[in-house]
Length: 134
Image (cartoon, rainbow, N blue to C red; front, side, top):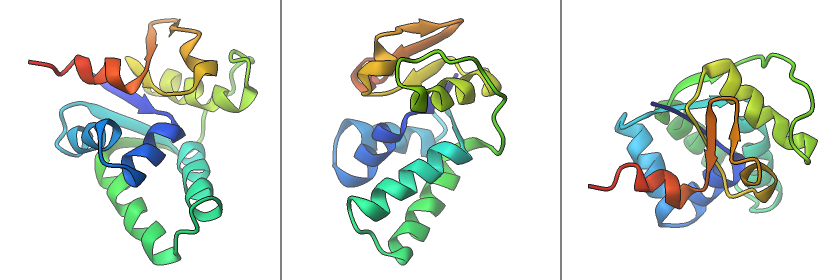
């Protein structure tokens, strides 16, 4: 099973203890294949640097954890037509398409409203975590 995490899920995974950090731990333990792309990682780092004023050392440590958790990091995304009402979110969909992901995990309503794109299910972290419930 492959999943793409939106930037907001990654931010929550590192800045709060809870559901998103648990999901990242599951990815690190290879409970599923986490797929990211350079664009998502760049956006994530930018938010951590600008909004949360993280140091270069902290960013390098976080980048190392992300690299360890991700089973695949896509360098260049294939162009796609505009899909999402927020065009900045199209990179998330493009990453999922290029990696043949099963899921997009996001808290972003602009993506969640789609519910599905082609065969890719778009859901929030709580619903994704429910897949692993015993």
